Image (cartoon, rainbow over all chains, first blue to last red; front, top):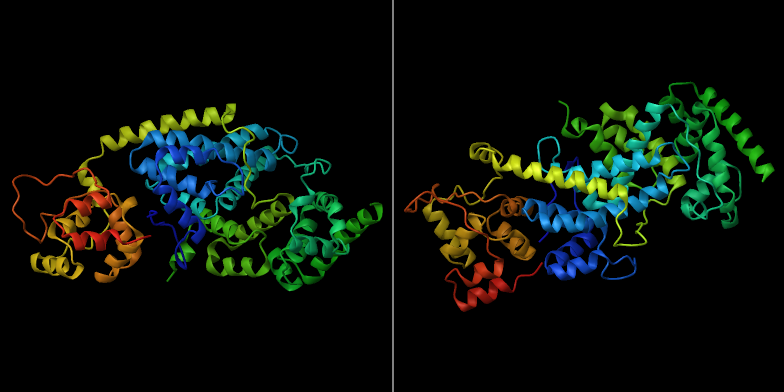
Length: 253
Length: 218
């Protein structure tokens, strides 16, 4: 039986997705040799694959039981998966000292386990037992943001010719981006979207904010104005100028 | 009165927002601004960063290392930190005075039962005194207790499943000297935890009781 989570939100205690809960229960009943083999499985379609959420639970459980040997064997596998994610999302080509940032993120993640359950660190890892990648996303954004503020450095988006960019968009985002740049919603336009995002990222900060709030997040013009603490016509002006630049890009494609 | 959600830390609220949806939308942002009014501005900024991040990366697909046996220099350094911190945690735990540990204990749903109530519960659950004592004193490894039995225990004692589960998982502490007033030769002490099956087999239960208990599943 998986240990219950403790982190609360206004709807009660966090709960793991049922699929994860079931996989944890199975893993907890398995012997060490089986688990050790399963940690090396990397085929996403294999039934033997241990999701990262399960690894987080098994490591926490081992530390709480005082079984440091198990924690020492499982932790590198979890860190290696997180590192693989960070090499893609915080690449050396995008930000200065990316390696140092990746190290800091992994270090923070590992320290969460050693501080787990102590005062001020109650249940942070519960988020990682629910949706590991989305919890890691917060940690990553937080670190990158702090690094950028510290260095006042602007980011460059990754190159689009490495095959990474195209697959990053789901249909919903494709539609939103397509509306944003007045490009039709066909799949072939996905090829242009990385350029659209790059252009978006190059917009002045207040224009970029207006575009994201209005066109990506989907706020109304009034709501966008309220959030930005400006008048509606200012929002319209910023969107118009942003659209002009993005449409120029479309014509160039 | 400020509600609990409003007091939730900004860090927790950001985690919650990141987990809620792959790409934040107006509905989500409104909901979070309403739930955490103290952090509304910071959450709006974070939502903008999430939206940009979602455009740039596939966030819901696991990445796996090409070679599961090789450890990179970064992971190696972090593992070294991890081992040191773990060692320090163990050292700190070793010198924690028992009184402090007791203040952080989880509520024990069996602790307030007097002797009669305890016996009544033994009968209601159709187990032995010894077996219920093991559950009360957390002498059974919680990982091995079927979720179905935990749920059954919670129902029979009118407790929440979460509260019963938290009790079974909490650190061992003896409550035998509480209201149940059993005679003891010396001070109560913790004993190594048994598996659920071991506990069932070694608690003076009849064959039928053992079969029933071992038939519970997750």
